Amino acid sequence: MKHKTYLVLLVDRVHAKMFVLLNDSVKEVLDLKEDYVPQTVKHIHGERDARDNASRHIELLLSRHLHKVAKEAYLFANKHTIDALVIGTHKPLFGKIKDHLSESLNKKLLFEFPIDLKVSFGEIVKKVKNEIKSFEEVKIDEE
Image 1 (cartoon, one colour):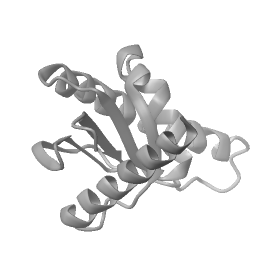
Image 2 (cartoon, rainbow, N blue to C red):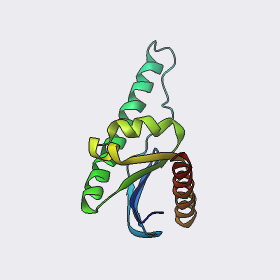
Image 3 (cartoon, helix red, strand yellow):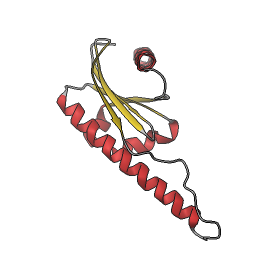
Image 4 (cartoon, rainbow, N blue to C red):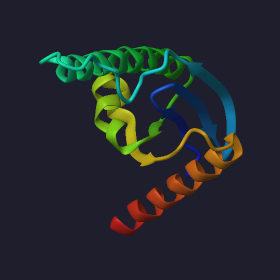
């Protein structure tokens, strides 16, 4: 890492975790636990639009969760001097998270990578460092 200050944003349907990575060490961690956003919602058989309503309900809950996460990420980033943003999440959420982030954070987005937030924090930090190192090596090779 080239002595950049990275904001690492990790998001799933239940949690969000963000931390600052500077000179290969973690500086501050913010752990958020929001309302649970289900994968599916039970519906009453026989209702014609039940599946559509359930899907819209899930998307609304997910949008609210991501909006809260994006707001906290913006405040967290403004508290620190951030050079780059790195997002870790499940692949289906990549675009949805970016849609909720502020323009200033989107401009600092370096890359996204898939990760499961259920692993230990030490494993997460190790994976993030490896992903950043790999990204920077590819970037140097392209120059």
